[in-house]
Length: 370
Image (tube, rainbow, N blue to C red; front, side, top):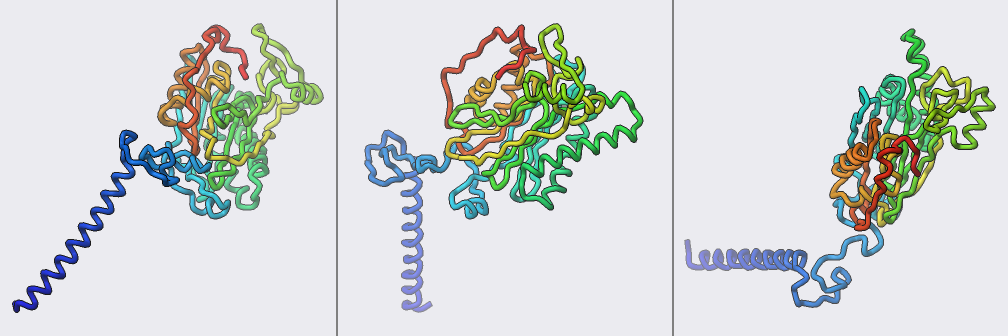
């Protein structure tokens, strides 16, 4: 190799080395800025470090959402709505179900990705056996998908799906020729989340949906019980009656503690219907922490704000679901206890150190709590 060629090689190699050193220096400089602790004396006038703490500003400081759940951006939805929207991942959803002191667990729950844009969450609390809850758990998603193919309004989709699955269950029971299944029924609380921002809930019975907004519990459902004036009037107009048991609980025809359900075909002529009440809400990920779907084993023993406060103390949704279901049992619930916790952008933002509970509920677990 000639002296000139060797000199060119050294020069070329030197340039590459200097370039690599420069790039490495920039990376290390960026890493140092990202991980600098509050003890660093260096001040910064950047809006990404407004308090000179050395920590980068979370997106929530710009009014978008907090980064505690660390979800990626839902790009199509963000483009559609003109603002960054986090993508809710099913892997981050927490679910738990406890049998309690019952002989079997008649609760069912399900989470699923229905389409690229729509997530599905549902809880079913069976009574008179698990047949109705099993049927809904197996087929509700299918009926919703069928109506989604022809209808864009999610409230209408859910209403049609509830009514259709009730008819299908009636046909199924008729073909089975099992008369005992005429008294089988289930609550149903179903939530659809579209594009990470449009939340629609439909419900019959006394399972509930609740949204944590700025640390406060926002109920998205209202129990269908004979205590409601409008529900009681419908039952009476249909030829039914309301009777109270020894604990002061009202029941339709002395049998059923709810006025709407899927199944319970022996009481259809007395006003028990499967038509759900629906609610639509747009999420604000900067201050909406989570959605919780719960069955009455939890609802009858813990009120909505207590559930909200306990969940907000938890590290992740799975821990939250397990803590709530176990807490209900510790407070005296004897029923099946099921919960789904769906995290949103403000997860972990609204922790309340002053969580308090009334332990008197341990001997009045049969009462309904707001």
